[in-house]
Figure 1 (cartoon, rainbow, N blue to C red):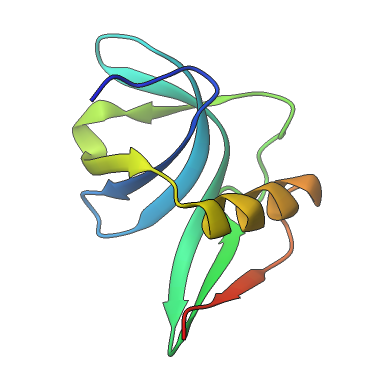
Figure 2: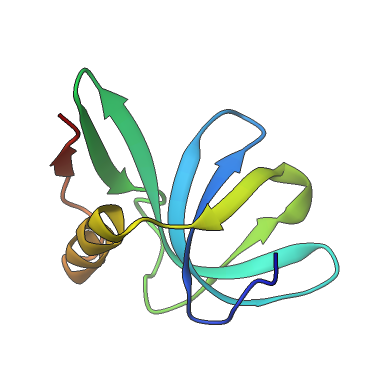
Amino acid sequence: MKIEKNEIYTVKLSSGEEIVARFKGETKDAYEIEHPIMVVVAQKEIRLIAGLFTNDNDNSVVLNKNNCVMMGITRDDIRKSWAEATGTHGTQSKKVVTE
């Protein structure tokens, strides 16, 4: 899969956590991402919460490629929730009902 700049991707980390972020670029060892949001599953809903609470959201962050287990383009409903969450600087929890 080719990683496209400015596309929103979902990443499963080696720790088991899942994040949604905009990809800005990559090096041999890392991805440059913006607005990483953690995916939290609670009963029948998905919640999106800030991935980094004290990060300056005007700056991108680096994600080590060794920590990525799986990656794919984020589905439309989660992408919309991600856009809403990042519009509030990623500090507010959003939910998507999955049933």
